[in-house]
Amino acid sequence: MTSDPPLPILTLRTLDPDPLVVFQDWMETARQRSLMEYPNAMVLATVDGDGFPDARIVLLKDVDERGFVFYTNRESAKGEALARTGMAGLSFYWDHLGRQVRVRGLVETVPDDESDAYFRSRPRGSQIGAWASEQSRVLDDRGTLEARAASLEEKYRDRPVPRPDHWGGYVVRPRAIEFWQARDCRLHDRFLYRKGPSGWSVVRLNP
Image 1: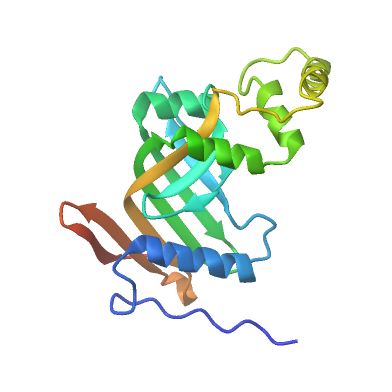
Image 2 (image 1 turned 180 degrees about the horizontal axis):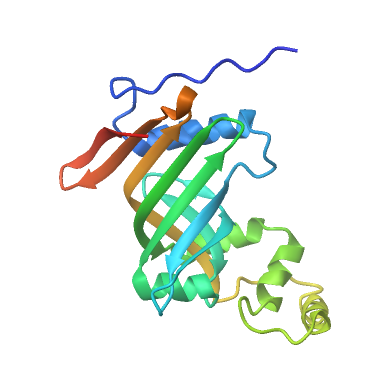
């Protein structure tokens, strides 16, 4: 059994000028070499109406020239926070690789046709769940949730499940992306990309 080759050393000279290209390369490496079941898991950080930070794990579903795309209930606590501030932070960590990525950016909803297409690709049980769960709201007992799901299964028994109006995608359009790679003696490599009027710039940070 052969071991994976060592990761390349990061330098300003070898980093791609576009951080989204770097991220896509890192994500592909994570998919191929990470021991995680969900290498696309990321921490989504928001700020609530009282100014408290909040964070939870969600799954990245796409990354393209716009930024980072994920899907959720827009009436949930995170959906309300995203609507209120229009900003979010993301964090990825692949322990097996010794790599971390941090993202800060502005948030927009994705077009309805894009949300529709992704919703159709989900397992039917997850489609029913999107209707059944009043996400982040108080639930008196699990039986209520299961009864709601059973009723929806019957309602849509012989037809496709439509996407709920309150469920859809977001894209985080990055303003800053930081790449961190572990090195010996905690002398890690850190590079910060910032987006300005003329495009991306990148600097090395102290670990």
